[in-house]
Image 1 (cartoon, chains in turn green, orange):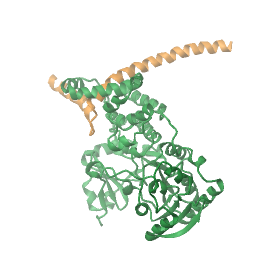
Image 2 (cartoon, each protein chain N blue to C red; image 1 turned 180 degrees about the horizontal axis):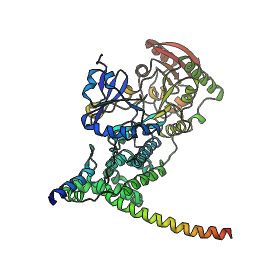
Image 3 (spheres, one colour; image 1 turned 60 degrees about the vertical axis):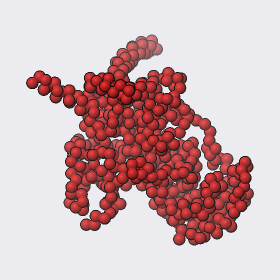
Image 4 (tube, rainbow over the protein chains, first blue to last red; image 1 turned 90 degrees about the horizontal axis):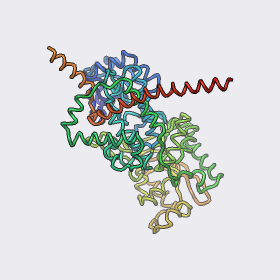
Length: 467
Length: 66
């Protein structure tokens, strides 16, 4: 059998129990000698089957190694997981998405604890969304509970979930930029430095942030003293372990983002064209989706997801939406979650999308490495890059074609109210910005399949197919 | 022999605290010992508190029925 298509996932190097291997577009999990005993426990206890049934864990099944190439014979076991259409990272999630992921993690822990098992880590990257539903993807994180053991992943849970959520709820600061810079999350010692005395009056904040930060600081300043304390620790009672999980869950459930109204929140209601023009736009989207029936669709500048939802209803199988506005992505996500839509809205800044980073600059992949789709819609989007960020028009098209070879792009002319607003306090340096130029450059690298005028102000939607 | 058993036991304790491929952070573990003690005390108090409350509730219910 051909083994050329076997590739070990770049981010799967930390755990010695196993790795992720891609084989012919399949996701396999290989188990090393050190992971064999743990896998046997997970499998024989029925936890594998039941965690999948309860929608905690992504569907994973054991494979017969005889059916696989020789490469796999050196491993103890091989499992296959369902494909996750798009991998997203906690720094692309809104507060509400991170909160959902945190609750999913804790609910899974609570369920496992009841079955005599716990999770060995608390990485937020182990939660992935399919549509808007969170799934735990790393079955090797499950281990047998040993009487008296401590919550090993507690520190990591705080850094990956609790602290970023506290940053949002106490300070109204989005966690995304900080998390993207510090891939392992927000350190408790750092969060402790920026919270106010008033915040510290909360018993929970005081213990989980201040006290934890001080104790961890002490382990650096007086390591011997802390080490002797550590060695003399008694076993943690079972009741205490589980009540910590419940208390953490109840606390996180009550957290909400300290809100401010953002520019795009009421965009759909306050946008600059009337309902007849809106209908026109909807028709163009509907026709395009019904014709193409894309398995995956990317909606750039998705706002509250109106056109994403319309696309799902018109024949798209799954949609990933992107926008830079925290509030609209939150609203879109909450709706997708409630209605169980195959729609995942994510936060992104098109002028500065997620880069390749982490170990060897391969551990966490960039936007273009992860997000490619059968079709794309970019409605009322291009002017935010070309005018708003001074991105040259030809480079804009180049970038768009890397994401999808076909799609719809709306051109917003200079005379349009939104562009006028953008140029109000700026010098207009965009002398080339016109429908004619837009069409000319689009035509260089793509065929224009359709062109529809949708507003009196001169907005045009182009259907393109890249050459 | 006693010493050996002691060593074995303490090792088991130690292993159960530190069996991780990620760094659990000694400070974070020590905090859990504190939180654990508080949580256990809290759980006991809450049981008594709910009994206390239900005692009055029953009393009130009886009065209401009357």
